[in-house]
Image (cartoon, one colour):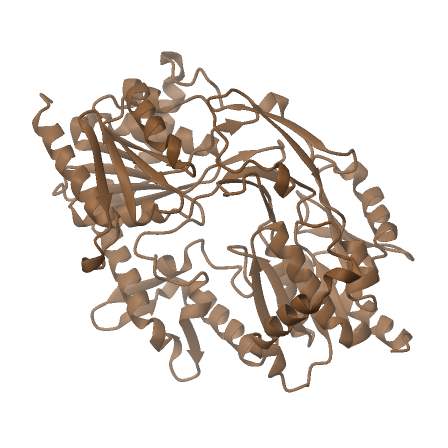
Length: 306
Length: 306
């Protein structure tokens, strides 16, 4: 990745063309009937960092994509159009209750009926296919896959630049687990690293923090929420507060690895808000979380002069 | 991973119990009607190596699992029972022609017909579901998933010990891309590695080569085929030849990253055999490869005194 990629020069004609053809090839949002005036870009899943130029080995970040997929469902319910920027193979909206290999596990073949859904899966398969198709057909869900951190950041930039025209009605909900370290292309081994030479010493450098560039350059008026995941609760809120200030986020969602499906703390410049799953209503923690975010986003839109 | 795990002591009562309950929970092979006297364990996909004890980051090996999934289909055709030891999320037998998200891409929902296969996907979905279900129902395909190298090697050991009683009728077709390097548990960071402290230096040590232990200890009479993948063709055949001798394999399949779907070289102690995809018959390179291996396995069984 070129650390200069955020400069004025890089937004040249070639990139403009790329952005244009990128969004030209994305019919759902263009064909939207205009009833939806808010768009959220939800990022989801982990990014990879190659260790070799002809990539055999890479470093990956753990992330099932469950947070992003679930939140996408609640944003759609709240009337948003969603650009779902997701890691290939990660969890998909409306598909959370499916088994690992849905096609071969949920279906059976009989001579009379051909391929049909197994009875035990009929409800989850029905709702997955129905809800997913409906969102795509209404032009409210655009899915864009990535694998490496290079793909992720380039796509995020294009989406940011393209959503600029929406002003404060655009939102970024950055739930993807983005790699902190990478090996610069020039210092990467060309071929597969050989194992007979003994232990392997590697030096990884920090990925430039692109959140600042998103806020100041790509889409300065958008409402921005980032995530901070830690396994050590001692440093979590401190680090989330630092991220809020440093990257000028509107909200930072702090979550701990072991309790992330039960509760999160939303850190804002007006204080911290604990958001917990409501067990009595059999809902996900993303339900009250998205509700809170949508309220704050509404206030943000009303308060702006755009 | 305990480097002593291949010693006599480790095969204690606890492990015996574990193996027993493991195979007790695997009905397909036990319920087999006995018509199938040869069993191949096909390993497939890459293994991961955690970088932190509470794992957020890990190193992964590139492997789609295409070779293992395709070969499994041809071994089933050739009359083998297959134990498919595969990386979660990697390519599945009979599912190679499906899109990335088969459930939401191949199906549609209509009020009248409920969930049904989209016309454009009807043939691939039908054959995937039919062939897969048939193999499982006949007790000829047992699928066991893994993620980390620790899981992979422990499961391989259990399978090896359990297949020992088959003598030379057992085969190991080791197509999984196993990590060469790992970070020992004791030198692993407990919490997520922090990024603000500057560049990250890591020392990875070599994974003990378990192929020797499989050959000498776990299942000494099984017919064993390992794979060697390189991006540098200069060193490929030399390294494959070394693996053949060092790990006492019966065959080593040498493949280059860019041409691996077109051709491979099978290295044996009687010379090298080039195996190429037959374009005129629209077949995979795994078709002639598995044919060659089955022939050699037959000769091996006939030549043994078991």
